Image 1 (cartoon, helix red, strand yellow):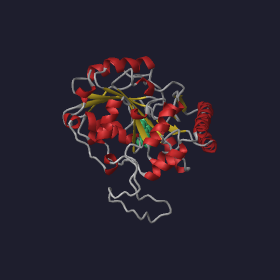
Image 2: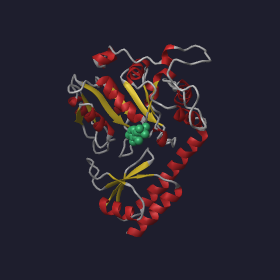
Image 3: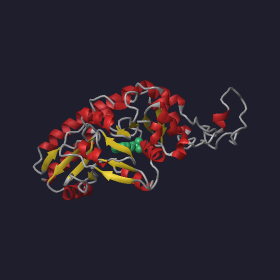
Image 4: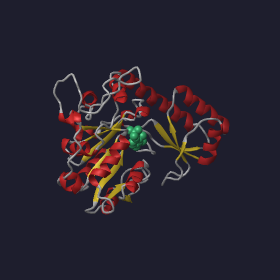
Length: 347
Ligand SMILES: *Cc1c(COP(=O)(O)O)cnc(C)c1O
């Protein structure tokens, strides 16, 4: 399989926008090439210059953290931007299709609808694992993307390693492994397998374990060829200077990030035990993420009761095979205790 055969023809032939910063790369002291305001900004910090289009400083740091080459990383306005760009690079509107495995993250279908791309659905099996024969049977020569979310949102589980490997070998398109929650999992990331599988694109984010959802920074990790097309298609300056500066500092605090993960995983175990003691809790699904999917007697009643008491969880009952399921994010220890105290009072 040739990756370039999967890319839209207009994108293959696209001559990307060339910015002032792309065209002059040497040393200089006077920049009169980008129509910026050389006086500065009406603000204590100067933001009058355009940011680095390829975010090289942060990619260098991320490449150390993720053990990949900097050129293998695309940075976007959340990993949601990476999902958007996947459609723009690979899916010919009105002609191509993609496969998703419900119940899963809602943005894949929304982006598909925005881009005029048919969405094909191969529901996860009763263990919330991919149904490989069903996926392969749904695929045809116009199937460009297969979205695997592992750990999966909203179910919380990882997909089996061998199942993902089989799909990477046998699916004749791009396999997107969305690892938004990989930081909480005990298994290794697929991000280090992109040399082995040329059709693999891994999505990760700073929004969950790194605690930077408000900044909007996510990434795609793949081989340099695919990331090169991402860079061709993206907006030239897609991440602002203020965000870059904060992220650069935050990425120095790896110890804090690790302690967040340890704390959230420990509190998840406590919450699981407490929930198991409640009479109206019917099932707690195993989670490798920072949330738990819980089946209760009546999800709407439980949701409304919690909401009336100021605690908001997510009712996922309308998703396939998630009847009466609530998705509960692990909060601070105090927040989790408040939730449990409320639920105990409900019974
Ligand atoms: C939260 C989430 C993301 C998106 O994260 P960004 O904030 O856009 O980086 C991506 N995929 C899944 C499955 C998520 O749950």
